[in-house]
Image (cartoon, rainbow, N blue to C red):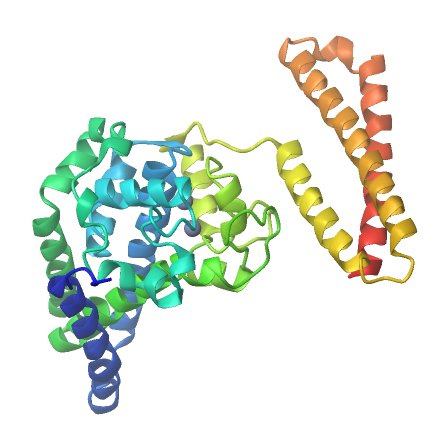
Length: 372
Ligand SMILES: [Zn+2]
Ligand SMILES: [Zn+2]
């Protein structure tokens, strides 16, 4: 089959920026050196670009996991143009298709099953998506956001303003124009591009399938570090409406921390989280599946499989009891019966069931850990 036409503009941008960053930056570092001001400006610009994509393009506009004040939306729209990753409307439309048809080579714009290179950058180098370049029917909601439409309309101008304007301004301030263009212009852009692209490539091949094996997405703490928290991609593909990607407090997810911090000052609101029991159930089902696979090779597989299933069923039953009582308790509290409830049977029942659930979980973890 004949390959689609090469998009020379994209290819030139990727190749030229990469070459200048890979050759020009080390050359300038050796011959002139970079001041601390320039290094700091490049790091801040890199974080600004990356977080505009993860906070704005991804978790706000593509998935609507929270609502944001116009000031944050405006900043993310500028940062997205600075990151040179197409308009919000285009990016989000592509991304929604990626989630809906993940790993489907005919529909997923950056299907991981097409190979590492394709999902990383190849999909943008040829006119693979030509048939739906201007079809934004899956993003009608975004077309109601004036900031989205303003950025889409003036995208080219904004990218030029940000990608030349910011490095030139910093060049004037630092007194090293070429150094600034190299660091804040080229190197920042190349690093920002490839760390984001890793989410489509590496995050679909490297890491754990903690919550589901129905798609190629993986959870990877190392990748999360370089992608502002987006490395917990297995969780994200199953719970895409959750504003968090790393759900545990210690998991590195600065995008989550930013969205949550903004809530305190009223810049973000209506942060969506997935029900705790659903998350826990998905994880347990995956542990069960992996344990069953490991046990198949064991000499006493039959008996052990029965035992494992029994423990799993017990755990799920106790979990259901615990969470349904927890829900009842929350409702009771909400109805402002708190004072009456404090000493009621419901609280006692809740505490007992919580204890039973924790004990059962401990025995499950011991059992599955032995199999690891
Ligand atoms: Zn997503
Ligand atoms: Zn993905």
